[in-house]
Length: 415
Ligand code: PLP
Image (cartoon, rainbow, N blue to C red; front, top):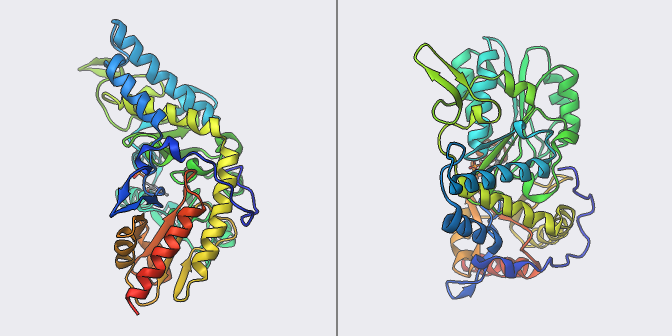
């Protein structure tokens, strides 16, 4: 993200938005819920829930093909969501904003439709060691299909990308670089604008997995300079089953459709089919209309609060969380990069991460445990998994206190 500040240890003032999130106001195992699992899926504010409900109750019909009023309303709502999201990420045109099911589908689309037709045996695709499986497996599949080779950029013991190694790896055999903006397992923020500049000097296209980037700071795809940027609605306080692929228009224009069906065509004949214009060429079938209405409401909500404010709040809270966790005897922090966002993974000596997760849940605290769909990260740090607390705009210092108290208690049970 372009807006994250570098000063993580200032005092954390609450953004005071908890009241907006109905799911946060419940008891779990007799204690008020503390939700520290937003990197997996973020809670939705009432305005998102209401926007979806209003659309479903009054405006729902299928989009694009109808002449009746409800179909017009649904089309307007769906297309104005596209425009909302275009502005949010500063894409140049609506043609560059493809709606998908999520980051995973967006990356698969690029692997199959952009990379596959261009790859030949001996070509290389570079990914980093800190990627989510969604930014590894689609490239492994396309390598298997084409004879291309997957090359992995190493990380260091703090969970930072080895930029010198990346520089060496980006040679004329490389057909694509696919890199995460923010690691979901480690929290590391990668210097995407610099990386894109490096790759483009060598004419290498760059896909950015932005699943963990968009919720935590303002993302400007033009300033980042990437060719593709993939992200998911449910990690940015919108509905599940919504995602976005930003792609440069000239590249998308050149790519064949990813899936065939209704809506992605202008004319179908048995002797040849004419595909629809962008972005519809990549949106076969009835889309998740209400989901994107909700996502547009989530974008409005985020912008009302302000992405810079959100980033500052989360940075301050992350500093506090990291310090408090690191002070607990027996806790090893996993992911201590100089530039981080909203995630702290850790392991506790002699206690399996799943036991930690279960014990803190008994005290009403929700964290995630396991490999976080980033098994190579676990292999690098030689751990079976980690416990991970991830922060969002609705968390505050009380949540950190509750996690620390719950952890203390869990650890004492093992002594
Ligand atoms: N990439 C990263 C960095 C993620 O954190 C995730 C989800 O955790 C994904 C990709 C996949 O996102 P989705 O499951 O919404 O497609």
